[in-house]
Length: 225
Ligand code: DC
Image: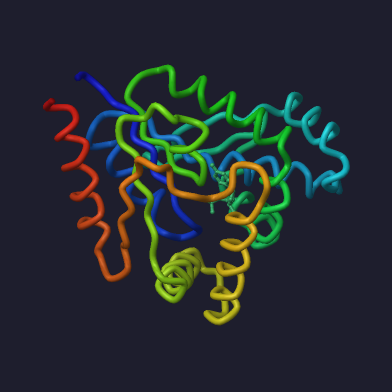
């Protein structure tokens, strides 16, 4: 087999995007951060003071300001809304704490899933999110479901924030992560859950390299078949 689709799902801060990026680079595949897309739509909704009952207006804005991806000079992935670079803005706390209601809107999910499936046509892809193995790429050759304790995930986010110069309270982070897990896994449309044929891997106490190695070995097994 020449190239495969790798779906990496899991709850907030389970390390999905960090390992997905490394794996995509090592295999020469496209990487798609689907959470960034839900975040971008959330930013649009918040900036335009739109609420869940205005889903058509949110979709109209999205059509005017399409989401696209680029790369900075130092190789970082950039996210654009129309011509505007929103890579930093979509990581704001306000966006993080509002993204769950936007991601629960079926018409928004339909539109974003369509875009994600289009991007996956290109060939080898590593996509991370919540519903990649179940909805977006149900035929993916490799499906991984990453989990980790709330404590460990809050600590990871705490360190990430600190590195970005954002001061946060660890206990608040734990509460926010637990609240987002609950909303993401109990929503009616495409809730966060492992696909039946996904491999669940608990990353608590495992290094990034350890997770990358585990997934890479599984991918190589499939490619060598
Ligand atoms: O991975 P993240 O934390 O950047 O994702 C932000 C939010 O987007 C998350 O709370 C759930 C939602 N999301 C989703 O519903 N489906 C996806 N495929 C990816 C993210």
